[in-house]
Each structure stands twice: as C-alpha cells, then as structure tokens.
Amino acid sequence: MIIFSLLLIHVFAGHVYYGDQPILVSSEGWLLKWDRFVGLLKYYFELMGFEQPTVGSVGDFNYVVWNGHTVGYDSASKFVSLDGVSKRSEGIDLLEALKVFGLPFVLEQDRLILPNMWIHEIQKVQDVIEISYSGEKRLSALQDSKYVYLKSEGYVFYGNVLHRPGQILAQFERTSNESIKQQIDLKGLMRLVMGRELSVSRVRFLELSENAAVSENELTVLYAPGDNRVIIRPYAPEYDGADWPIYAEVRKIAEKLCQRFSLKLEICPLIVLPPQTMTMLILLEDQALLDELKGFLEDLVR
Image 1 (cartoon, one colour):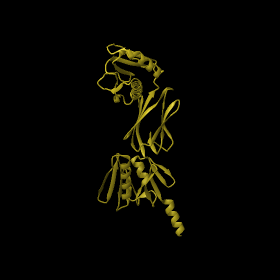
Image 2: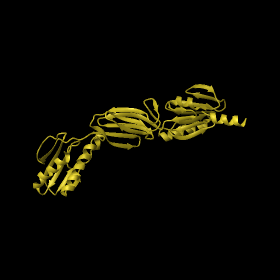
Image 3: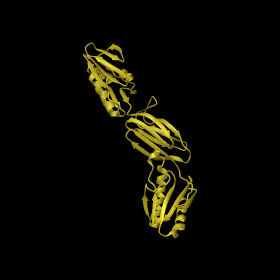
Image 4: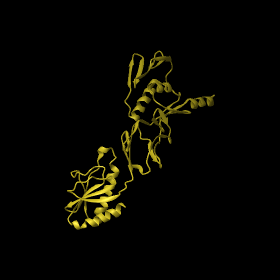
C-alpha cells in the first residue's frame, strides 16, 4: 500500500520548466491551488520581461487578467472561470489556463516546458538581419554556401510554433561573397550585419581639391600637404550596421599604412568623407612619397 501511494505521487507530480530551468514542482500534477498558479504566472512573466498581469478579487472570487483574457476562481463555491466559461474544480488546471492566455508549452511526460525565448519579429533590412525578442537570447546563427540559418538553442517561440533546441526557425538566402560580418547583441535585440567580401579593383590617388565620383570597388586616397597624418571617417551607425565592414576594412588598411611609413592615424568626424565607401585622406610633408604609398597600397589590396 505504501509502495502504491509513492507510485501515485511520482506519476502525478508535475514539473514546470522555463526552458531548461525548473521553476515549479507540483505533487498534484497540473491542478494548482490559486496562489501557486498566480505566483507561477507572475514569476514566468518576470523572467520573460512581459507586462505583469492584473490580479484582484471581489468577495470570494479571485481573478487574474492578462492580454485581454481572464482566469478566475471562487474559493467558496469551488468554481473556476476561464474567459467566462465556468466549471467546478478543486483548483486551476494549468494546461487549460495557459491555453486561455495564449501561452505556448511543450509536454514531455511529467514536464511542462515554457519558452525561454519569445521572438516577436525577424526582419532583414538591407544588409542587417534583426531579431526582436523577450526572455533570454537562445538563438545562434549559422551559414553555408547558400543560406544564413537561425537555430534555436533553447525553447524558442516564433511564428506560432514552439521550437525545441536544435531546430531551424528561419533562413535567408546569401550570395557566394556575402557572410555574417558582425553580431550585435542588445537587451531584447539581436542584429546580424551581413557584408560582402570587399574586392578592390584599383587604388586611386586624388588631390583634395579635385572633384570626382567615388566608385564602389576602389580605394580612393585624397592627399594634400600636411603633418604626416592619415585621416579616416568614423563608423556611421545610422546605416544599422551596414557600414561596419567597409569602415573596418578602411581602418585596417590605414593602420598598416601608418605602421609602414610612420604616419599618425586619426579618426575624425569633422572631415567629410562619404560613408559606405573606401576613402581616406593623407596629409604629407613630403609629396615625393606618394608613388611609394600608392605602390604599397596596391600590393596590400591585391
């Protein structure tokens, strides 16, 4: 008889998880007392960063409202109300209540798993893939010769589907010379900056006073008399990360140029150089160095 009772306790014990983290153990399965149900709900919303539910009572009737839905319980008459539909119950059926609130879950034997990442939107704008979410960042980016993939590293809810760890939840086509250049992680926001492998067709030197169009696949070097400085523009954040690969490449070239010829590098926002182009300004005391500088740069980008 004792063994039988222990088996019953084991069979009907319910374990609630936030992703892979246990947050509640119930010896009565999925039928929860009112206070435990409300406590679980508030704790989960806190973990996810959701707006907290409205909790109140009128006489013996307790209620919780969230996202336009209501779950209530009358402790005197033992009636539970799910969006106005009432029935007699000794507690709150967790599965039914979660469905009323539109909260997804996965059942695995005695485990109920709630998502630990909730993706609100995935969009690609120009060269940036942007993911906005609540909860933890449980997502990784992979790429092969044709696609960039977003893979779940936890229990990720997106597109009305709760994805288990290891599942692909979105993919984007990429060209053969395009790849992920930078990942930017902010609270509730993940950005993947895509960039093409920069191919420099030529190096062009122009006097600062000259007017000329800047081509996409060339390194344009403006020069003028000065104090042996190489000036580049700062990174332009207003392009949502798309400027980063070009800025980083120009800075790398400028640093090598400065190291080779003992020049000073300056990142100056006051010098107007066109964004998203490979341009720099060189101020030289000895203009005779120009041919040597050009030869060095041509070898460097070849």
